[in-house]
Length: 125
Image (tube, rainbow, N blue to C red; front, side, top):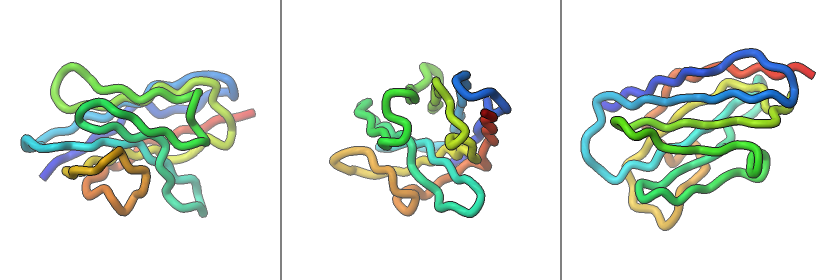
């Protein structure tokens, strides 16, 4: 059973930046895909960025060009650098993971089995 723990959320002004982190514990060897999702109140959970084991990345149109996902060098960790934040970026951000053999990383929540508890991001205008 893999445990995912997110950190780094907070409250910022529009135009500022935040860096989220996700650390995986208890994982086994495998072809792990990891991703960042977000969910605002009353809306569905949406994918923001996903990374394949070999490093290929997919971004949603909503965050492409402003957000950057990267892997850590120690253990199984994932980061999300969020720049030029907008009020519409405010949401609970979740880290997700899956063992799979996809042709490319996926941004659909139903494709991921393991989830963290989330970290809240608030952006004021």
